Amino acid sequence: FRGHLGWAMVEGDGRHYTCFYRTHTPADADSSGEWHSSHALVDIPTTIRVMEDAVDRRLRHRNTSHNSEEWIEIERQEIDRFVLNLEIVISRHEFNPAFKDMIEIHRYNPDSPDSQLEWLHDILAHA
Image (cartoon, rainbow, N blue to C red; front, top):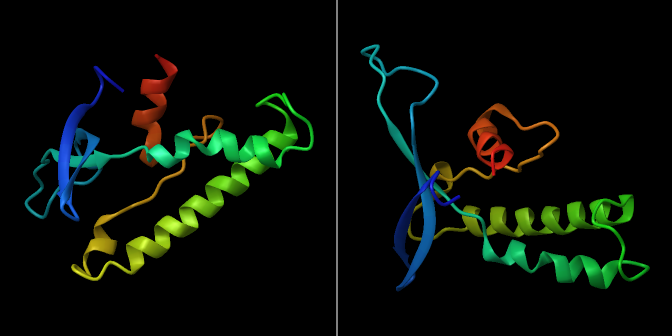
């Protein structure tokens, strides 16, 4: 994402978290009819990076292609579990009840990216 998104540091729970940010123009204008830039934090959780090990452990045969049906299905299940846990953490946020309303989880599918992630698709397509 370097060169496409900026770096951001967010403080929380007494520590700093690094992530990316993007500036964009929302799809709709405000009540005055004006368009304003908006900022969004973008985070690719580091736990996703280690998911490959979890998938490998669940495969019936070693050295299975990442494009195989078995790999793709197990990977989907692991991501489903991750998203479920993330949603639980977000919904239980004790210090700021509005927190859950400020967070959106989007899943990227390169074969059919949703309109919310077209910007990401464009970055990855040109990488």
